[in-house]
Amino acid sequence: MYKHIVQYYETDKMGITHHSNYIRWMEEARIAFLSEIGWDYAKLEACGVISPVTSVECKYRQSTTFPDEISIAVSVEEFKGVKLKLRYRMFNSEGKLVCTAGSEHCFLNAQGIPIRMNKEYPEFYAQLVRLAQEGAEETL
Image (cartoon, rainbow, N blue to C red; front, side, top):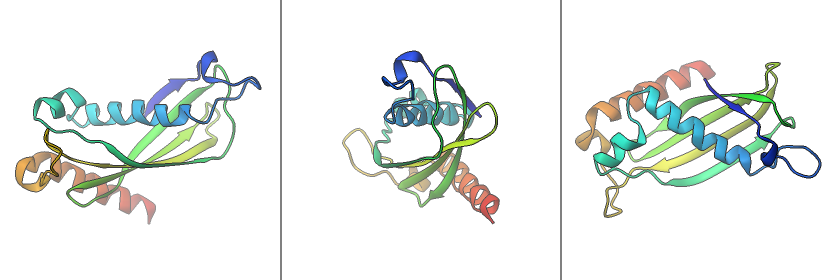
């Protein structure tokens, strides 16, 4: 689980975390998640793989403020070979859910052409498929 401490500059005039920061935290957590599974951004880029965000969504459940510690759980919601959907659940230090979110990504080569992950990166493909299956089992 990724941890983020709300910084003072991330809050607005009312002392509440500005909504745009949750998107940044998702990226921080996604980078940590990929590193944990052995496919950090440096490795992907060295392989010539780019993974742009194609969609993002956030549902804010409870406000956060400086200096709250936010724990972010990342899971693979769906993976169909080209598109990857990730889910994020953010909790405050009391364990209360503060935000649920999702991001969608695709995998492209340096020329911007979609990559057939199962053919070009079968180990990464298999790992994402397994994580998607585990994520589906958790929601049952």
